[in-house]
Structures are given as structure tokens and as C-alpha cells.
Length: 523
Image (cartoon, rainbow, N blue to C red; front, side):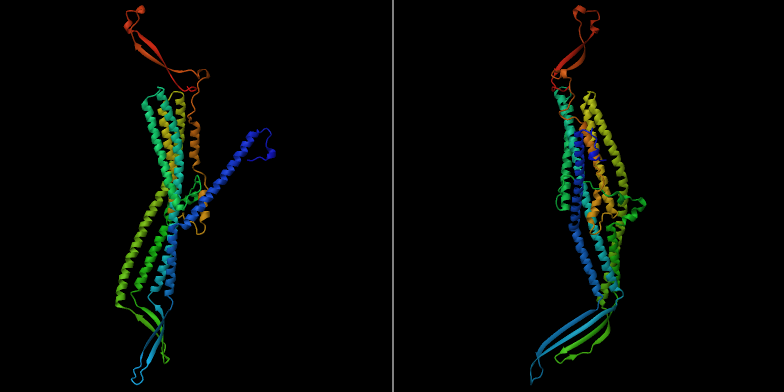
């Protein structure tokens, strides 16, 4: 709630008012920058989708299928043939030899009136082929978007893991430094320092692996987008929850929306239409013909002829039988491919749906575990500062907290990737033609699911001691040397002045005071 300037209380300190105004402006600037970043990413994704090589290839195949449809339509039109022939020679007369020119013009019109449904079946086959090419275009878009979204999430995953790795490394470096100092001061053994150094090396190795994975993921994302994104950090992307509000009973129906499954069904329809066309080709076709001939010189014109033509050759009949067998085999193959695809897709959809349910529980459990492990680290750090807990025990707690944070981040992004896969399997990763940008913007309107992890990292940085922190010594002891006091129980002989009969059973207590150096100002 904002107060007008005239209603700001006079007792409000000017510094606090300035801080509040600065914070509001900063928050507004961040929100505007976030909206701009989301718009930039959505535009780049839309351009990449339109210009993707696999999408352009599918568009070219669609144009080919459309040309085949036009060709099948033209085949049903009447066919006009026009032939011109000419020759020259000498007159056969001996008394008057002369060069003669003979030319002929033949015109014919042929129209198929009955072919046992062959032309109709061919037109249906190419129509199904066009629909199948259209579905393959949708399939290419869906597969490209799935790859693009997964690559984007992988970059975001490793960006957050690198943050976790850097914080873990800094915390372990501090603990290793403290343990090494204890060794130098005689307060711990060299083995403890080596254990701390080993834990630090393993943490550094894991952080380097995250950085390498981040570089690989960025290269893949840049290749899919065509060029790198001009952003320091990617905005969060998430499939809208409304897309995945599915019941188990509806999964079979939802999987039928997949572009891959629809394209395969059209392939079956096309193979069936091709079989009908080949079966019709075994029978003769009946054509209506119109023929006219004209000869020159002489101006002879033959009378036009109109008739019916029925033609069928033995070789054509044998070839048609072979083509029928081939079409039957192709139809059976496409039907088996469809059955296999339906089985695999439905199983994959059900598995992805169940995985999403378990992924949500996993994220919740690891979020709670991360909070508990952070509390354990804080408690052991306080005990360590009070001298009631070893540094190695604190080190174990810190390593456990780091691993829990890493598992938490992995679970979050496993859930996001699973949402993309499930949306693709149910046919929801397919924007309408020309609506790619608004559709993509719906993926960047959710809350930032990384905030909880980053809040935990910030809290851990605040509670963790820095290299310059330590327990301050009292002012009167700040410049004095420190001492380690040990108690030794040693049996020994009794001096002569106090010798008794039971001198051998007397035990003396001796205190050893040994000075050692510690940094001034710490205790």
C-alpha cells in the first residue's frame, strides 16, 4: 500500500523514507526487466521454431503433397492429344518427277468414364498423404519445441546448481581453513585437516562438473536458437498447470492428441486407399474417345470418330497383381506400426503422469530436508564456536546440507522436464499457425520456483562465518598470549620430608601450562 506524499507521517525518518522509495523503484525495475527478458526469450523461440531446418523440411514435404493432390485432380480431366506428322519425297510418276510434301494433323479427346474406382481411390490416397504431411509438420514443430524447452531447462538447472556449488565451496573452504589453523595451533590432528581438504576437493570437483555441464547445455541451447541469448540469467519457464490437469481415466484419450499418433493413423488410411487403387487397376478401364484427322495437301479431312475404348494387356494385369500384394504388405506394416506406437505412447503417458505425482512429493520432501539440514548446520556451528563440537562434525553437517540442496534442485528440474515431456505426449506442445509468440509467452508467466532455493542459500550465507569472523576475546585479554591447560595424573615417589609407610600408594596431580600463539583479537 502506497501513501501519498501529503499523507506521509512527519515522524518518519527521512533516511527510512529514502530507503523505502529506493526499494520500491528497484522492485519495479526488476519486474520490468523480468518482463523484457521473458519477451526476448519468447521472440527468440518463436523465430527459431519458424526457421528450424526440420520444420522447413516438413513444409517442403507438405508442398510436394499438395502438388500431388493437384496432379491427381488433373488426371480425372479429359485428355487431349494433338499430333502433327510430315514427310517429303518424289512423285512416283516417271514423266513428271517432282518433290512432294505430305503432312497430317491428328486430334483426339479421351475421357475415362469407368475405371472401377481407381481414379477416386488415387485422389483419396493423395488427400490422405497431404493430411499426413500436415501432421508431420506439426510433429516436427512438437519435437523441436520439446528439444528446445528441455535444453532451456537444462541451462537453468545448471545455472542454479553452479550457485549452489559456489556457496558450498565457500562454506567448505572456511571450515577447511579453520581446521588447518587448529592443526597449526596444536588443537587438532593432521588427519582431521586432511579429511577437511579431501571434502573440499570433492566439493570443488562437483562444482567444476556443474560448470562444464552448464557450458554444454548453453552450447546446445544456442545451436537450437541460432544465436546466444543476450541475458545473464534465464527467466523461469514452466508448463501451465491447466495443461496437465489430467485424470488417469482420460490419459488414453489425451494421448490420441499427439501429432505423431495422428500422422501414423493417416499413413494407415493412405496405405488403404493405395490398396484400393491397385486393386482397381487389375480391371480394364472404359474410355470415351473422339478422333479427327486432317491431311495436307489436298485438304483431306477424315470424318470424326466417336467411340468407346476398352484396353487391357496381359503384362499390365500381372503387374497389377504384384502391386496389389505389395500394397497389402505395406498396409499391414503401417497398421502394426500404429499398434506399436499406440501401446508405447499410452504407456509413456501413464508413466509420465505417475512420475509427475511422485516428483511433486519428492520436491516437497527435499525442501523440508534442506531446511532441517540447514538447521543442523547452524546448531553445530554454534556448538563448535562454544567448543562443544568438533570441526569435522560441522564439516559432515555442511556436506550433508550441500548434497540435500543439490538433490532438491535436481528434483525441481526433473519435475519441470517431466512436465514438458507429458505435455508433448498429450499433444499440448503445438501452437496454432501464426500464434507462436502469444502461446510461448504463457510459459513464462508463472512464479519463480528457484526463489526457495536462493532464499536458503542467502540464509546460509548470513549464518555462516566469514574468514574475518571469530569469537572476540575480552578486551583485557586481547593482547595477551593464550594458554592450554592440561591435567595429568601421575604416580610418583614421596619426598623425604613427608615420607610415610604408604608412600608408594600416593598419587600426585600436576598441571602443565603450555603457551601457544593465536591471532590477536580471537579466542
